[in-house]
Amino acid sequence: CRCLGALASCRGISLTEVTVALGILGVAVAGTVRAVPMAYQTVFQAGDVTTATALAQQRIEQLRNRPLGDPALAAAPTAETRLANNPGLVRRTIVADVPAEGLKQITVQIIQAARGETSPTVALTTLRAY
Image (cartoon, rainbow, N blue to C red; front, side):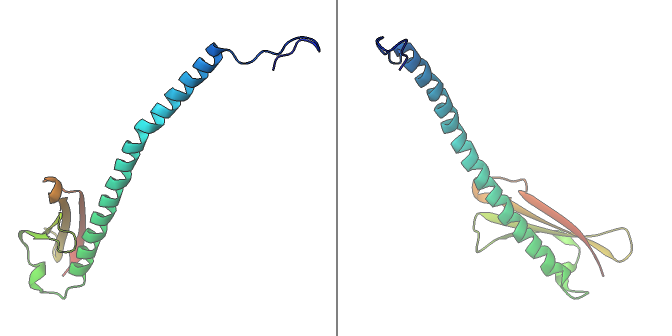
């Protein structure tokens, strides 16, 4: 209440003030509502990248722990494997000889084939001595 004196009448909030306050509140809520789907999409993509990175790292560790002369470490063209526990993902493994004596380059790429992508979501590369 806005009172000017003991005998003065009190006034309330005007319709203009209410309209302005609701307009400001509406703009704030609309901005938040627009941000939620984008935030959800970002979190979803981050989960995909985390899964792909873990799968690529797992494959690199498998190949790094193979004995010398193992056929899986022979320099070969790209081998693609659809992952059983993640059917939407394809793993591409590339083993190549490096010009330096006694080294192999191992590259593992994870591709989200379920979305029709052809470029890797994640690509990890390491060197292994043999």
